[in-house]
Length: 67
Image (cartoon, rainbow, N blue to C red):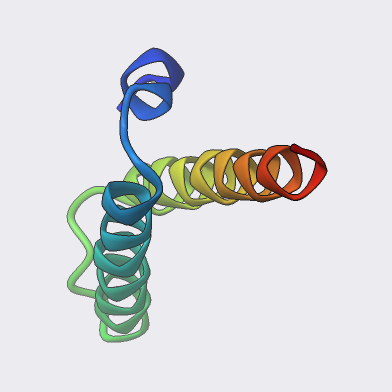
């Protein structure tokens, strides 16, 4: 998901998406450890999207705290 799409989401939607990605990340690492992972690049994409979401959530928390 692109950053533009993520910026349009609410904090609740971002939190839900973060939860989904964390679960997917766990599943990918389990697949990797059992040699069943079909697309190893997916791990990197999930990790990056998680970082983007965390950044947006933190930015919004800081903005609401200062306002």
